[in-house]
Image (cartoon, rainbow, N blue to C red; front, side):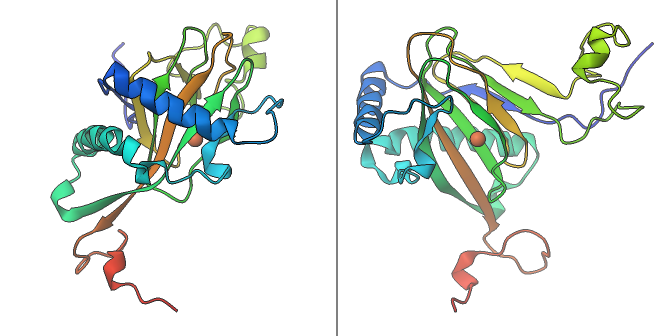
Length: 227
Ligand SMILES: [Fe+2]
């Protein structure tokens, strides 16, 4: 039987090709940021710069070249969705580093205040964990909870596949970037290496250059009126 795969979630993947000397420089900068913290992070949750006062990383000149490279990839992603980027102003709204030590991870969350989000793997040793995406909608859930793990254990479901799974795991190489709609729930898996994983994450906002005739896309903030 032929199956048509309708309405796929587009997860963009690309390689950034950062110079290794530059990578070292950026890793050192993030290590310094992290070292300024007085407390040692003994929790199972990774250190994330956005909640530690380092949420505008791309304002740092050292990260400008990386920001530029990432913006090319984001444009490619938008073009895949057939969005006419000529009509848009696109902004990095926030950008920050995540610092994941042994056995640390990040639980499922969304970035509800933005349009597109990304994670770039600045430092990613083998077995240091990947990213999991979760579906907001299980298209083929013909009976409530029929595809939960316990149904596999009870042999009601033979095995997980793309039609019955609501989660997908990506373990990309260092220097890769993953781009996705900000509303997509995602988490990271525990770092099972002895080495640190560093990613650069960011949230992107799109707005119309000229919103006349449009109803739902954000109008340009140049026309907003402050209280
Ligand atoms: Fe995230």
